[in-house]
Length: 238
Image (cartoon, rainbow, N blue to C red):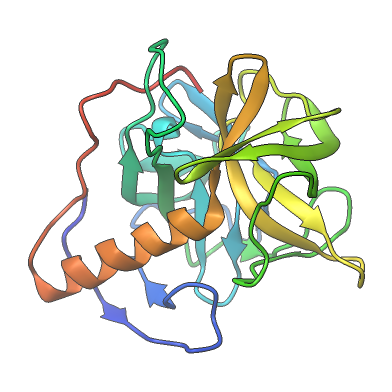
């Protein structure tokens, strides 16, 4: 994990602290599109890209999707590099609803790729700090394996929530955006797919993930920490 930072900016209107992660060193194919819901690969891990910020040229996926540093698309083209992550996702362990689950990775996108925040279905994916998951809320999830599936939020816990009534997932969907449709035709991100809890697909809260990213950027910029290391639990297969 890199410890070198180019700059950190604060934007009051932004859903997270606007920051620039270290530039991806590997060259990407010029003009290669990067967008939420696309397939990304890191080592042998295949996952789904979650939130993408076109202005800051950063993207997020699940922390347990991390690999050896380089991030590529399904054809092996480099799109960026792993920068920060947190991951304490248990692998097959029984957890109760009091456990806090953290599972996100920030990716610094290559200067050669073309970045947008449009989901494969055509809706713009936006971050709105006023929109958070609550039980019964309409919700959709996009994964590279299952596509878009919709239902409702089943329950909200400590940094994560479960979904039901139509939301489905498979291996490879990890990190995929979980969002609630807005009246103006856009989609507001509320989480990123993590795994399943019992019979329910589960996601980490975007508000929790973005807050943790904010904390880690501030810590790294102040020189108090380097890479954020995962908690003792091992990660599941993506």
